[in-house]
Image (cartoon, rainbow, N blue to C red; front, side, top):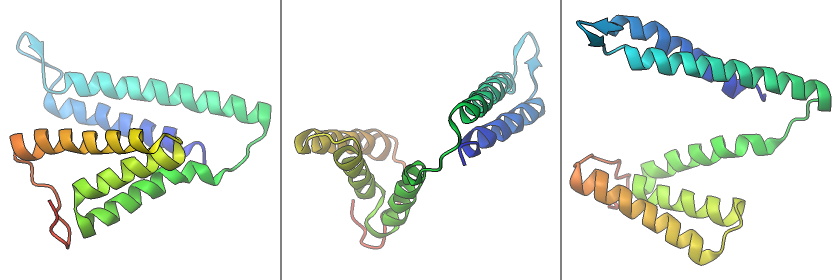
Length: 143
């Protein structure tokens, strides 16, 4: 289970490297559109392999133990996505950030509220009001 994220990242890096050649690495006298994806893909591959090797060494030293807490971020993100279909993306994002800070990070109520409302307000101002990005409004049509 602990190898899933590094393997997915490794496959993503390989995909970026292969896709980089479609955009051209060097066009005229400068880097082309595929230059940065190639660099990013290669770095992702290197870091993924090093992470896999680290986890392999650590598993040998300690013995592998499975923890359900490892699935909690993915479950919380899935809940946020499903909730965004009901109440809208911004409200579900605020609930997700607040709940994560309050219950997982054990922050105070005021700090959790301030960070969640502040983050959503900045996202609303930049993406919705300024850039006019349409967010999912959900069944209730809030915000």
